[in-house]
Length: 100
Length: 371
Image 1 (cartoon, rainbow over the protein chains, first blue to last red):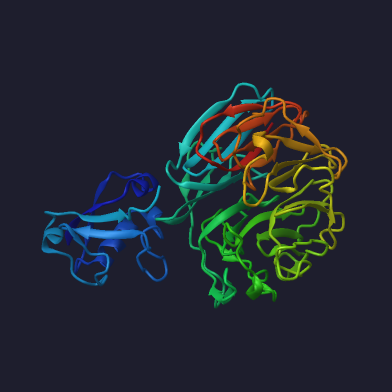
Image 2 (tube, rainbow over the protein chains, first blue to last red):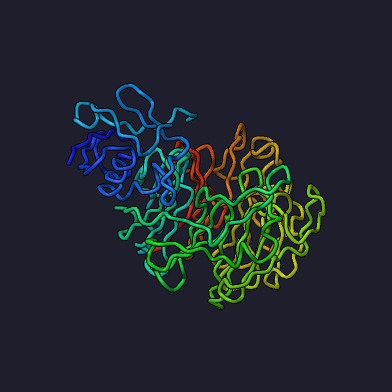
C-alpha cells in the first residue's frame, strides 16, 4: 500500500471540504487511474468533476502534473513517477488556465 | 410573522437573502459554492427547508447540491446525468447532425407534492427526474424521443431546457420550454409529449410558423389558472388560454417585446411583469433606463414601473430565471441583473429598492414565502 499525495484545485477543495493537499492510500500499481479511484473513494463529492463518471476519461479542462511534467496525455494505466509513488512528490490535479 | 427567503444564483456562487414580511431589512448569507456558476436554486413547496441547487463549472462539470436546513448547510448529491439509450443527434448551429451531449443543469423544479421528487432541465435539452432527493437521476426520455428531437437546434446560449411548470391541478400535466425548440406539454406524466407552439411566429427561422424551432425564453403560470400560460419569446410576449394549444401575441404597447423574464402576480392572475430588453444584439434596457413593465389586463396594455430603478446609464440584462414573486398579502416582486443587483418591490411593482448592489452576475432568483 502506497500513500500518495494529491494536490487539488481550490474549487474542488471547497466542494469536498478538504485541504489543498490530501493523502490517499493506493494498493497495487500507482497510476493515474488507481490514484483517482482512491481520490473519488475518499471524496465522493468529486465524482464526475475530474473525469467522466462512466468512461473515466479526463475532463477537457483538467490537467495532471507531477515532477514538473505534464502527464495529462499519458495512459491512465501508466505507472506514475517513482517520486510520486514514494511520496516525495505530489500528483497535481490542475484546472487548465482558460478564461475567468 | 411570515418571512421571505430569496435564493440567488450567480456566476460565482449562491446567496441566500432573508427578511421578515416588511421586506426592508435583509440578511445576506454567502457566497455558497464560491467561484462556481449557480444556474438555479429552488425550494420544495412541501418542505421549505429542502432546497435543490445546480452548481457547475466549465472545468469541473455539473454538481448537484441539496440543503435540508433552508440553505444553511449543503451536501453534494448525485450528478450522473445519462441520456436514456443511444443519445442520437440534434441539429448543430450549421444544420449538421450533432450528438446529444450533457453540459449542465439550467433549472431545478421540485415536486408540488413530494419533497424527494425533483425535475432537472438540462443542456443539451432533456428533462431528468429524481425520486430520491437528488441521489440518482433518470431521463424522462419521452420528451427527447417524441419525434422532433433531431430537428432541435441550440440558441445562442446553448440548447437548454430552461422552464419546467408542474400543473397544480393535474399531476400528469407538465409544461417545459427549450431554447431554441419551443414549448412542449405532456398529459400523461412524461410518457408522451406534444409541441405546443401554434401561434408563435419567428421570422428569423426558415418556416416562421414551424411546429418546433422557436426560441422561447421563459414561460410562467398562475397556479389558479393552470390552463393559462404567459411566454416571453426571443421577440414577442405571448399568452395561451388553452394549455398551449394556441398562442396569442400580447406585446401590445411595450416599447420592445424582446426580453427574457416573465412572471405573474401571486394574487392577480391577469397581472404580468416583463423587463423589456432593447434587442437580441443589444442585451440591455432601452435608453439605459431599467424599467419593469406591468400589465393588469393579462397583456397588451402595459405600464412602466421605474420608481427606485436606475433611469440613466444602466446597461444590465435580466436573465430568464431571474424574476420571481412572493406570496405575501401584498405581493413582492424580485429580479436580479447581470450587474449584480437584486431588486425588491414589496408593493407589487410600484416601487423598487436594491437589496444588494454588487453580487456577481445574477443567473436566477427564486423566493420562498415561509409562514
